[in-house]
Structure formats: structure tokens, C-alpha cells
Image 1 (tube, helix red, strand yellow):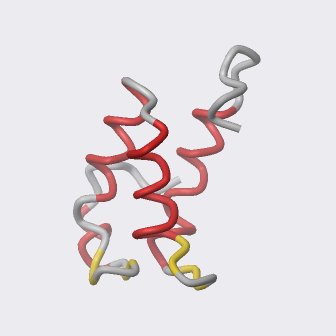
Image 2 (cartoon, rainbow, N blue to C red):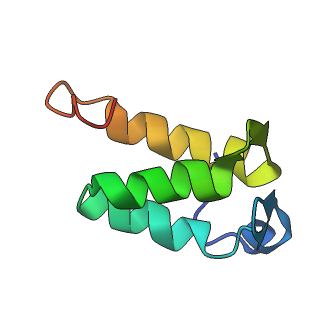
Length: 76
């Protein structure tokens, strides 16, 4: 799993250039789940127009970790 502080995020592409702000978005979602922020991250950056990016694969483990707990049904 790519650490959120890894400088490689700046080299991973996303739908809007590179993924340097994706770690911050993941941290914010992990601290406080917001459906609109999650949709913006997923559809605006990670899976835009049915296309996956390098940042998509790096973010996937963090998104799965958020959805894992039994009480996080909304995140799933």
C-alpha cells in the first residue's frame, strides 16, 4: 500500500492531472465520511468517464479499508 505521505502520489495520474491532493481527500473521508466528497473523489478523480488511473489503484486499498468495518455500510 502506497503511504499517503509518499511523494509518488504527485506522479500518479488522475482524471484532473496528478494525484497530489488525493491523499488529503482520503484522510478527510476516513475522518468524516461525506457522501458528496466521496462521489467527487470517485467520479471526479479516480474513475472518470469509466476510466481508471494510476491514482485509482493507489487509492483503492484506502477506500476498501474505510468500507471494511461492519458499521460502515454507507461507505460500501
